[in-house]
Amino acid sequence: MQENNMRLIDEAISFEPVKNTFRLGWEFITLNKKFTMSAIVVLLVLSLLGSIPLVGFIFSVFSSAFALAVQIYAGRLVYETDNIETFVDDVHQIDGQKLIERHFAPALGAYMGWMVMALLFIGLVSLLLGSTNMSATNNTELIALLSTVGIPLLIVMLIFSYVQPLVQSNIIMANDFKEGFLAVFTIFSADVWRRAMRGSYFKYISVYGVIVLVAMFLFGFLFSLFSAIPILNIFILIVFVYVFSIMMTVSAVIARRIVE
Image (cartoon, rainbow, N blue to C red; front, side, top):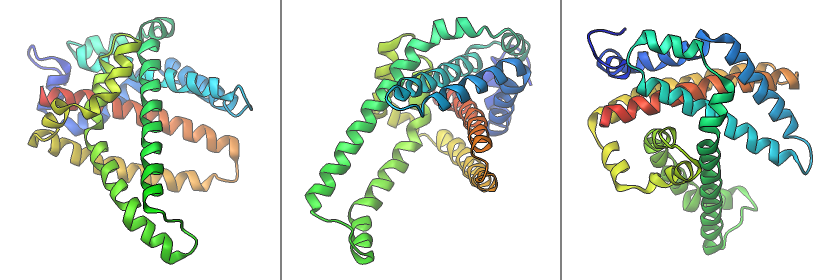
């Protein structure tokens, strides 16, 4: 895929960017199977420990931060690597300890940032529901509530999800806890929204988004087939989330490069 002196990410963009998003993400996952399986096992164990009363929240935080740290590593690797040969070598030589040392702090900062964002969103929804003075006690009131509050909030969430890849790319470029935390709030940055209005970005995200939606639908169907086997369901969910997060990470840095 690499030609001339172009960076790996530039070559990916110049030739079938959506296809190369999945190709690079899949290569990161499969080139170092030992690391991939180790990461999945760590996430599985932390997820199971997260169900423990009282202390489970701590394990949930570590699980999310670890997953984000892996994403940051994968994203920076795709974004900064000079060529496919170097990319392959770096993936083969992933050092889990160094990954944690370098990227866990910004990952934890980003997680805390999203937690604050979630609390703000919940507060806003509660405020809107309180101002409407409505409660869904029957189907008619439920429909009225959805049309008054639910649908506008859904539209807002879809709009924010459109620029989320650029926000994710800012998280990937964070170097410490503070930068990771503040990167989350670049979702309100005028520069992020201005870049998201470019036609090249819209084209890339639209095509990629449709493929992701289809993949999520197919996964939902597969997930339902194993609903009677809880532990297997959890394992399948962890694997899907891991694969999905890596693909989303690669798409984030490609989207960033497209609008630079």
